[in-house]
Image 1: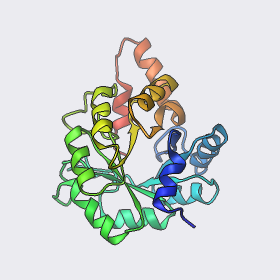
Image 2: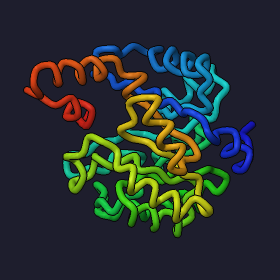
Image 3: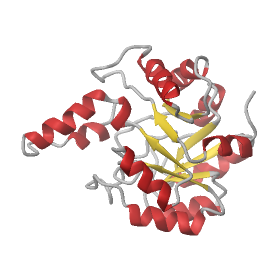
Image 4: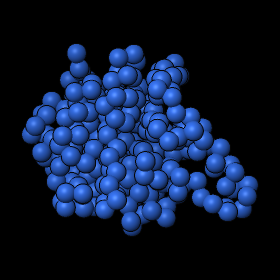
Length: 246
């Protein structure tokens, strides 16, 4: 039984949402690794989980009693849009048990040749009871997502679009501006480039309703690579591995 939208958002307010994801080519991959991460997050006091793919969403949802933000990463060579890029993918995420469906709501062009944000109203129409999380990369995309009826907005894709792919640190000033202008219309979540508890606290002070942290908690190979890359004088960049298509 899913909570209603208001109850769901209130349950996550002020808390940590842990992104528990593993790809088949990750060195830490095993079938139950995401479940162990999710159970660890629940033990620690997290208020929600973000997970990728119907298979992993269902595994976690069946065993961990926390709100689930679900998405499905599907890569194509001709586009950088990969987060739940189609209506069919959104339906599979919902059927797997997600309480919230995360969508790419940037202006990037999808594999099907359409702006990614055009999917948002289609999902709202087909799955009206779902909470929609708009993953955006800048203020203008956040504004459009709010106007199109997104329930949650976050700069998840800052650093993943062509214009921002060189970025490693969060743009806290831009996020604060989003919170100032949109917080009365949407639940504002900070996601992306949050590496320490101190970073998360800054985001709450700037207006975040909740904070998502992923790689800094749940991807030990990327945590190790951040150390190695800096200690070797940036001979390579761990962010290239984080952004890689799978």
